[in-house]
Amino acid sequence: MDKYKRPPNDPLYQARSWVEWRIEMYEDLMSRRDELKEGIKDGTLDQGKADSLIRAIEAVLEEKAPQSDDPLIDKWEAELEAGLVPNLDEK
Image (cartoon, rainbow, N blue to C red; front, side):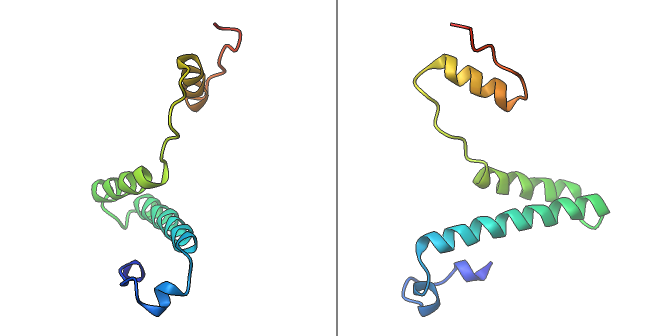
């Protein structure tokens, strides 16, 4: 991904906003993650190396939102992420 290794004064770099570059980077990472998963599935990639790269990509893509100041809300959000239905009557 050499397109991201441009100096700040490069005309190509300056032709786009920081937000546009950031969106493109995320799109490229999602695409690369899909390629790695496909390579594992069809047996063309070493699973150990590909899994390591996938975890690194997901660490960037799957940033967790900051926790709230309320531990009960944090608990409910964790339960939702785990696929559980939280008890909203809980206090």
